[in-house]
Length: 223
Image (tube, rainbow, N blue to C red; front, top):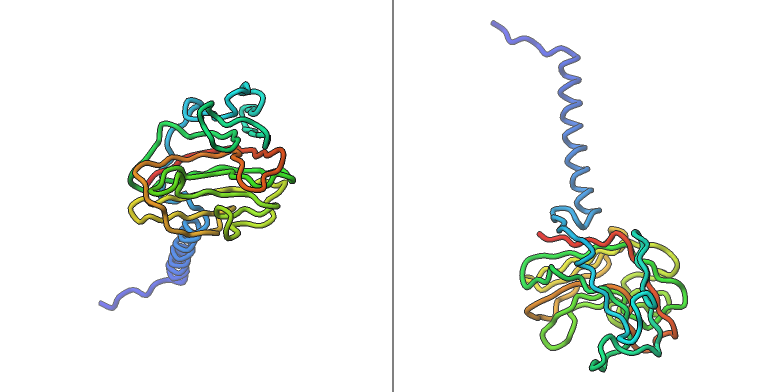
């Protein structure tokens, strides 16, 4: 008995399903490439995880505000350090507590905003290293976001919201920085036995008299 020939409608359906599968696979690959958090799991955060560091002689409201959505942090170049015994530069930063890590792959995500005029400042860091205090810092100099005071990560960041993702693979000792979903930096780590994330403003060389950054939708992920 001869096999039945497929009808035109059946052939059309098979072609449609094949094309749909191809498009779906491409869409999944595109999503993975466009979203740095693909494959990661977000950790649970509440206000206890957002620990404020500010000049030791200033009340929290004098250098920090949070309206339930946006965290605004600012500091003056003339301010005191965050602790009386410290000899570090002025800062108003959030130290992400409760998720210090020494292994695995971890990711910081946040939407940042730097007003024009702010310069000579670190706005985000991965704390903990072998010979130095940090394994990554992102500085702002004259509107450019830089890896420390070196290569440009993103130009023209003043007065706009940008999505920042920082991925730290401890075992591979690599850090990858994404701006608005696009990879902008991939560097080697600097060792260290324990790490955590920080964001805000921390005065560096050639700092402006007032430094400010704003943040919203801050999340931490792990893989």
